[in-house]
Image (cartoon, rainbow over all chains, first blue to last red; front, side, top):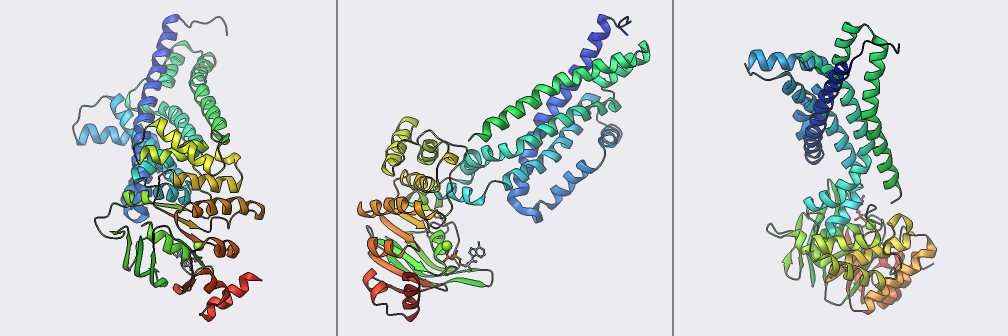
Length: 217
Length: 241
Ligand SMILES: Nc1ncnc2c1ncn2[C@@H]1O[C@H](COP(=O)(O)OP(=O)(O)O)[C@@H](O)[C@H]1O
Ligand SMILES: [Mg+2]
């Protein structure tokens, strides 16, 4: 196992895949979270009745397997709308909406967890809706949402492996290509797994650290 | 001056306020007593516009609370309110709790807001708790912090809704002492309370509420010693045993 045909170039190839994974994940998590906050606040604010159409669309993104979403989105954008989008763009777009759908749910729940009596106290002091949101709801809801959000971010990173279907050579796809060529599946999968771990672990630990810090308040 | 004219308010089919008329003058201390569910809390939340009313009128210093163009956020600066539940902002330290509204609502600078907060917190006896988080405070301390937080906005009126009802008995005294102090300083106050001894001591007038109606209002002597209304008499007798 230690006499390997794996070269420096191969490692660079894997690293490029890891960069793709990180890029797609970072874009999807950042944009998806921003959208998710907007959708989540909207859903909480207008109530279940008026939010029903949005809720339905988000449920679609949450219930159809990501692989199918990617294929369908790619086909729809390319063949029906005749847009010349790169696989990377399609992957980021789909993964962003997928993230936003889950994030909206987390945000809605977290806002609901802020006691209405606390919010009423803020409004009684003359704070506007915006100020209540910014200085009371956002910080308190963030504490509630953080564990689920970390889980979502790590999940999106792993799910991002599926974007190979729209021709994005991310980490897992790069690994598969090398496995086919070098016929060393165990070693390559260990390296690939280690990459994922190295990216995830600090995020998970950072989340744990924040939770601990906030629980002291 | 707070002027309440023929205010009616329902929650669905339940009429909670059935035409309340009441005027509170500057410097007056009014306490409201009455059974649970008689509409006392609802009246307070209507006064600061947290709840809409169905008909009638409430004016604070001439501004009609429920009129279309009224800026409620601005109006609420004049009306401090403290509730039964201690509503600390748990993510902020004690001094930050008190500084937040002066800074964000009144636009006061950080140093000045800190000075105001420190002054108000010392006033209610929390000068040594500035930098702790509310979760480290007892219920009585949290309630006094809520009072300081309201006072930091320099309100013209203070509304208290059963602020001692959720406290352990041994913590009630310290909060009532704070209210007594405010009353003696000339603060205009409406206190909803079940503490009859306190009501008798501090009030200029006492109002008795029953089932959405203000059944009787008068001096503490009248209400507690010679009530005119039979329900008031029954309630007072019940609570004084
Ligand atoms: N937000 C609300 N929705 C529906 N009913 C309410 C609401 N708030 C209060 N009520 C009802 O209105 C009545 C009066 O309540 P409240 O003003 O809290 O009485 P008090 O403070 O005198 O105990 C009660 O029957 C209560 O259940
Ligand atoms: Mg009440």
